[in-house]
Image 1 (cartoon, one colour):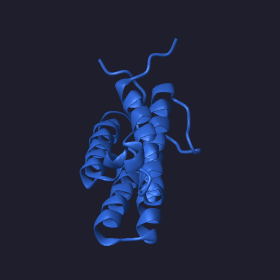
Image 2 (cartoon, helix red, strand yellow):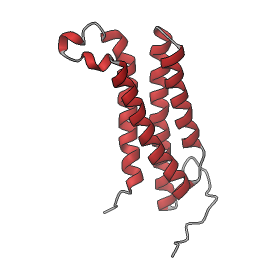
Image 3 (tube, helix red, strand yellow):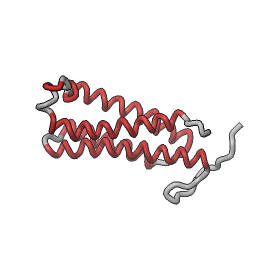
Image 4 (spheres, helix red, strand yellow):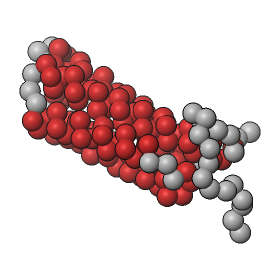
Length: 144
């Protein structure tokens, strides 16, 4: 039985949270008038949205940055994580209307993809396999 490392659990949580964030950001503009009727008006509150962004940032940093330094040393997950947050934050601050409803969910999906790539890279490094036909630049020798 394979034991999951804490980083892979964080990536699983990060993928799920980022995907849910993307769905939330895509659907809220459509359902905003119905949320108060269902008692879910807090979902459209800016405090709730910024709390979710901060949670995603904490998950991303703790998972992807730690995996980068401890395991795989691949920049792609880091790049995707930063790109996703740039899209989300720029979308919330500078964009309005339908363009915001496209850019912000795209940022959430980019972060989910960053967690997925990181999850795969950690698995590759732990198993010694290849991912996307990329070779390793470090050895898998056990450290004592």
